Each structure stands twice: as structure tokens, then as C-alpha cells.
Length: 233
Image (tube, rainbow, N blue to C red):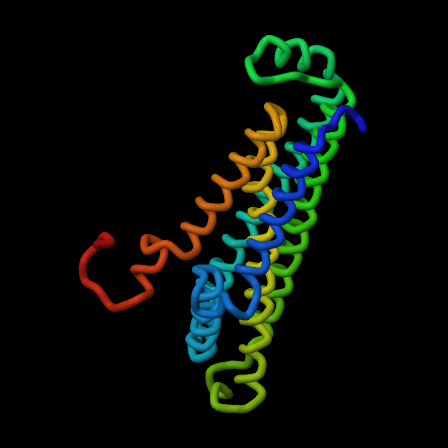
């Protein structure tokens, strides 16, 4: 169907399984205090606790603005990527002529167009995640601005409020991570344009690299203990 083989179906199923598995590993209960992303959630709470007792919170607002600007950059990049994939669809004949001369590639017009639509959907998912993260960072700024003054830092309301700010920042960061996840898996998806074997190999490589980023020693050594050296051992 559409020029796909059973091996293509297996490769695509493996791609989806890797994405879902990584999502569960990053955001499931098992990841608590294990993944690099989840460990940073605790520092968001600590940040807000320290912010509560500061008179001047301009720096805190600037930090959130910097996070928001970074998210906006990735959102705009997602739109550019969507435009690029749609442009590829309009130039299918020219692109297929180029790929036809490459080894291990047997281009088929129908499968090519379906693959490209799939890549468009991945970037569209990234855009929605980044756009929502941008909005959540905006909400974080509003909550930060409504934080009670230091004189009320010991009140139950103040402590409840900073939990809201920290949770809002955490959710924003989580959606930002999901958007980046789409970008990373899109790189593995590109292997499908070669063949199913390249698709599976690229997916496995991306999965391993991302797991190493989250659970590898190089990612955790700074948070594991107090050290005076400037580089991991």
C-alpha cells in the first residue's frame, strides 16, 4: 500500500514504540530523581522559594523572559521546518530524481509523499508544544509578578503561591522538552527516506543518545555531589 513494505511497517512501529517508551521514561513515576529533566524540577521549586524572600525580583522576571524567548525561537523554527517539508512536497519530482542516483535508495512517489506528510506532522507537533510552552512561560511571569512581598513570606498563602509558580514553570519546561523531543525524533525519521533499515538504525541511535543525555554520568555529575573541580571525572 502506497509503496510500503512489511519492513517499512515494522520500522515505523519501532519508531512509535521508541517515542512512547522515551516519553514514559522521561515523565513516568520511575523518572523521579533519575532523569536530568525531572531532577531540574526540584531546582525550579528551590528557585521560587528563594525568589519569595527577595525584595528585587527583576532578575527572576528576566530569567523567565529568557526562557520564553528561547521557546519562541524553537516555535518559529518549527514553522520554518513545516514550510520546508511542504516545499519538498511541491518539488517531489526534482527531489526523487536526486535520490534515484543514491545507493540503497529506491524512491517511490506515493511513499515519498506519505513520509513527507509524516515529517510535517512531527514538526507540527513540535510547534504546538513550543507554542503552548511559550504561553505557559507567560503565565509563569504573571504568577511571579503576583507573588506576595517578602514581609508575607512566612504565610501559608505565600508558600502555596510559590508552589503554583514552580508548577507552572515545570509544566512549561515539560512542554518545551516535548517539543525538542519531536525535533530529535525527526532526525531519526529522516532515515526512512533511505530505507527501513536506515530508519530503524537512526531511531535506535537517537534513542540511545537521548537516553545518555538524561541518564548518563556527564549529565548528572554536577548535581550528584558538591565538587570544586570544573569538569566531570
